[in-house]
Structure formats: C-alpha cells, structure tokens
Image (cartoon, rainbow, N blue to C red; front, side, top):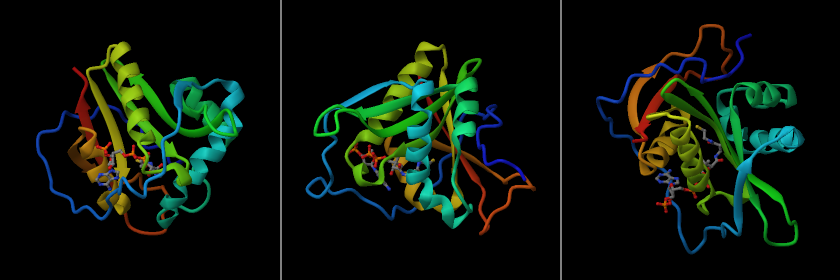
Length: 197
Ligand SMILES: CC(C)(COP(=O)(O)OP(=O)(O)OC[C@H]1O[C@@H](n2cnc3c(N)ncnc32)[C@H](O)[C@@H]1OP(=O)(O)O)[C@@H](O)C(=O)NCCC(=O)NCCS
C-alpha cells in the first residue's frame, strides 16, 4: 500500500492561474477560542509521541477519504529525518506546556514544502494555524527558499482552499493520487504555492 505522504514530489511549478472555490467555513471572533500564550519552537525526539497524537486528532477529518490514523511514531520519526517539525505550545493556563499545534517543513533547493499542519480540534479558529504557517515560512526563508508549496486533498478543498488563500497561497494545479493509494472516496491532490520573497 502506498503511504499517504503528499510531499513526495516538490518540483511544483509556480502558480499561473487561479480558480475560485466556494467557502463553506468562516470563523466568528466572538465564539472562537483564545489562542492563549503561544510559543513556537522546533520539535525534538522527546516530542514524537505527543506529535503523533496531535496530528492524528487533527486529521480525523480526513477519514472521509483515508481509513485509520494519519501517522504513527515511526512515521513522525521518518519525517524528522527529512525535515523539521515546528510545535506550538500554550505556555499559559493550568497545563504549562500543552502542545496545541504543529507543522512540518521540508526544504529542497530553493523550495520548501509545508505539510501536516495540525491544530488541536478544541483550539482551532483562534489563530494558531496562521502563526504556525508564518513560522514555517520564516524558517523556509532562512533556509534560502523562495517558494513554499503545499497540497490539500480535493475532498477538503471547499474548506482548505479559502483558508490557505487567506494566508497568501494560490492554486497551482491538480494531481492524481498514486494509483496504489487506497481511498474510501474519489479525491485528488490540489497543489498550492506562495512566493516567500
Ligand atoms: C486547518 C487548520 C490547521 C487551521 O488552523 P486554525 O488555527 O483553526 O486556523 P486560524 O485560526 O489560524 O485561521 C487563520 C486564518 O484563516 C481564516 N480561515 C480559517 N478557515 C477558513 C476558511 N475555511 N475560509 C476562509 N478563511 C478561513 C481564519 O479566519 C483566519 O483568518 P485571519 O487570521 O485573517 O483572521 C486546523 O483547522 C486543523 O488543524 N485542521 C485539521 C487538519 C488539517 O486540515 N490540516 C491541513 C491539511 S492540508
């Protein structure tokens, strides 16, 4: 079975057209949870188990297309050997270092790939995702990247395209799933990019 690892190809051409996608989601400042006192740092080996739990909790929403967990501890360790996880910790409140979000960045030449963006379900809609994407872009820029690439699955395009557009990303093209990737429903990748310089 093909592992669901959408950043196995980073050579994505820079966007040259834009498509309008319907938005089904909006955030309401009066009902959104507070972002708290968020600190973003690079993950270490000690964070593997918590990262796995966080990513799987956030990616339950992708079970419309994929069965099972998004990743396991071994998978997280494999990602760590090829790139960097940034972690968002809430340093306020009773639990003094609750892991509330993460993002994975992989850099190749002058492009970086952003993946596994995850915010604890109870903390979504409070700006943590935006902070993580900004931190990932800063890291990529410092590593010499001029473009950030990412992929979303089309089954979640209605929700995720407006989100990434709001953060400055543009539609690039679609791409089929690998033939051996087992899915529960028809879907494909949507590639998006953002210039970093
Ligand atoms: C997607 C996800 C990371 C977003 O994180 P979040 O912390 O809820 O997002 P934020 O609160 O930082 O939102 C950032 C901005 O996007 C906007 N936004 C969020 N969803 C939006 C939508 N569907 N359409 C338009 N704008 C949207 C917010 O209003 C906010 O705008 P502002 O900062 O200008 O006020 C989070 O919902 C998540 O973990 N989802 C499950 C995992 C997932 O889908 N990851 C991405 C896979 S590619």
